[in-house]
Amino acid sequence: MQVYPCTKEKKYEVSYIPHMLEKTNANIHIIDPKTTEWKKVVDQIVESKLIISSSLHGIILAEAYGVPAIWLNNEKSTQKPFKYLDYYYSTGRMNPLCVSSIQEGLKIKNVTIPDLSNIQDNLINSFPYDLWRQI
Image (cartoon, rainbow, N blue to C red):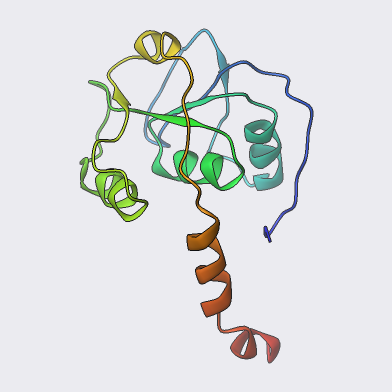
């Protein structure tokens, strides 16, 4: 179950999601996280075959929708790696795939994601629906 079920044809080989504090001029499709049109962001992620992202939210969303993602930790990054490592470790990946440039990420083939269905099911089953039905 997804909050926003979305199936789209693939339009982009690779898309880049920068961290919201990052300015970029990448020469690949860029998904702008600074928008109120969140469905458009999800649509573009689903339309991508691969995501390279310096945004943790971009990585998590991509993987939640079954799109492989590569973590970009470059010199522009203002983010500490702790939160990224926390996410990867919590999904059973002790040696996460991390690149230092978009060009390095473009060279990587066959990026996979773990089966997250058990984690997703546990999250959905633990959601306090009864609290939200009253609102």
